[in-house]
Image (cartoon, rainbow, N blue to C red; front, side, top):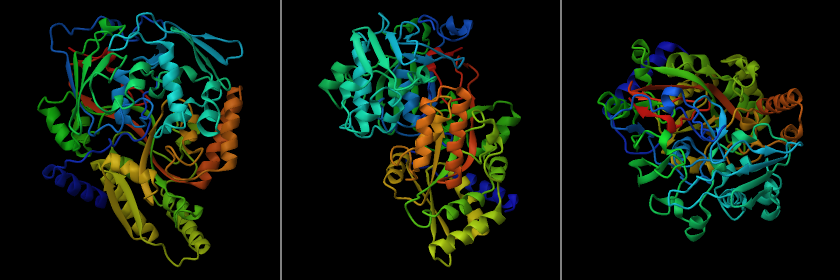
Length: 564
């Protein structure tokens, strides 16, 4: 593959993008399911700098922030959301027991202080702040947390793909999957302001989990009176975070307003956050240049690929590390990707270095592993050589023989609509045609439709991405523990499952890390996905926007943001 050919392809695609506009919705190129990601002490501290805590130089400047989230959020219910777009909104309008501050540290939020922890590290007792209220004036209670968590774990509630995030709690998995009683789940409101949580085993990252949106509370009284409370903005969309959901114009715009009843409202300087749904990143950049947007890029949308060189030259492009992986999922239940050798052939026939150096150009790192090197340092090298075409052909030959085929059938590579996804897919299409001699067609769909197609198994190879919800390898590995949820590959393995189970009861940190590495080795040998690159945060912003830190987990907290 000659890079000149890629460059010509890129120029042609981007040039077309300047003349064509589209009205569909799509997920950002720098995101995917996550988990979207934004996971994570003293109740009164904000976690910002001194200037930020004092509001900086906001003065009398209009405190309005305009961003582009590109697409309709699939769900604004904390219990059913699983993606970065939804999470970017939920993290501003809700708040969990703990919150991740601008220094990347977990601190009390709805909790009045650090929880009491038993000597065996299994029981956490939280006290809910006395000044915590819902946006309708109701007090936030321990019952709201118990209700929200058990709602997710109730087998009767569908589309709760992130329920496994709660499985560290005693009895949680049994209630969701094995017919156990919700009464036996280890979360209990001892009184209006005291929540007791009993874990299945010591979990060093549990407090980080309580900052993640699946752990957010839900107003019990409102949700029981109106089970569809989260479908639209209105009186029943009751929240407890720094902002409220003022309006939700579906497929057009979300507007957040400062929550005057928030316990730490004095810290919040922004009065309004306008979140537009402009699916074309070139249009979004034009809006930014015209002053209609204050932010372009991570974590909300993508910087157009063609604009990256000039932004770098102008020194207005920001790049930071991000614990996430961009990958192609193989449908392991459908021929030919039910064959391990075929999957390996396709994975090894990709030139990742060429992609990150000639297409994305945002400091991304070629990925030959699942877990980012920020967690497992040895994954800087990974499990196989990049662009190993000769070995790929050997796997192809072996796979065809095992399947009884003379040649590969036509293959469809699917992705959610995005300029960046399209250019990467076209480059990979070219590599597979040239290196494997296979007929490859491309297919793209708007984000919500795409998720439905992936979830129903209606694909052969499909683009996905995963951003860490918390900084631990288990967060990447447990995606593929069982068929369903966010595991679109339909791959599962008994030994892999046993290792993940063992990691949850291992209290020695070094031994636990080795167990997780052993699990990753099994996964990478089976190759149900082809990793492409490890993400970076890439963005540019109005110089007057202050107090926003893009975390290594891909989230932002607008609680401390202001316009200078």
